[in-house]
Amino acid sequence: MNLTVTNAEQAVALIEQLYLHYGQQTYEEKCTQLQHAEQCATLALEQGLGQECAVAAFLHDIGHLIADNLQLPEFNDYGLPNHDELGADYLARWGFSERIVMMIREHVQVKRYLSAIQPGYLTRLSHASLTTLSQQGGPMSAAECEQYGEQPFLADIIQLRNIDDSGKLPEMQCKPLSYWLACMPAYITEPCEENVPLVEPQNTGA
Image 1 (cartoon, helix red, strand yellow):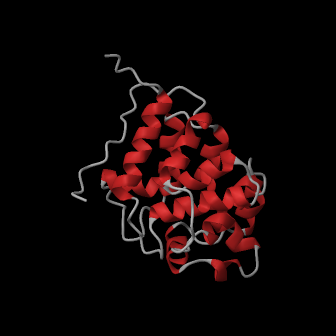
Image 2: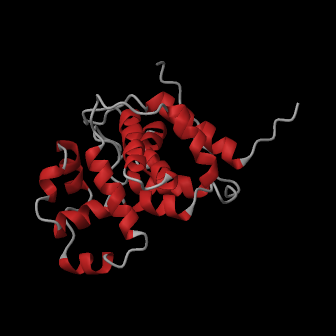
């Protein structure tokens, strides 16, 4: 029996296991991580942003699930403050496209950016997002904002952030996990880095 699998197959299988094991966690939000991922991806498609952005929207908080699995000491009731970096690092190692990786890597920093430049933005944030904003450095300074305005993929990142802030409705009807998993291989464009340990979700008993 040929047990060889492609990078895409490995990555998608691991992502599926992460959401099956940890997708019902809420991290103090009104919906589960799986609901939030499905809602954000659905909103991206409804807004005409395309499938690649929808995949980024689905995966943007995967760092929380990875941190939960790894039982990192920084992990708390709200998840991992720097889940953006952790999630992006793993997705880059698994070969996801630069656009997806950058959108996920920056979706926390752009919250800091919008908090500083957009009047009323803070009123749109959930209690959990406001709490984690303080853990993530708070609104950017004027100098930080000026530099951040040159960020590659900035328009995509802002769109993802706006979707992230909106996709927290427990009753919203969306396509299931299997649909989004099937979309992912098209955007795994690079070979997996060698000697990178793959995340193996622990048995939670659930």
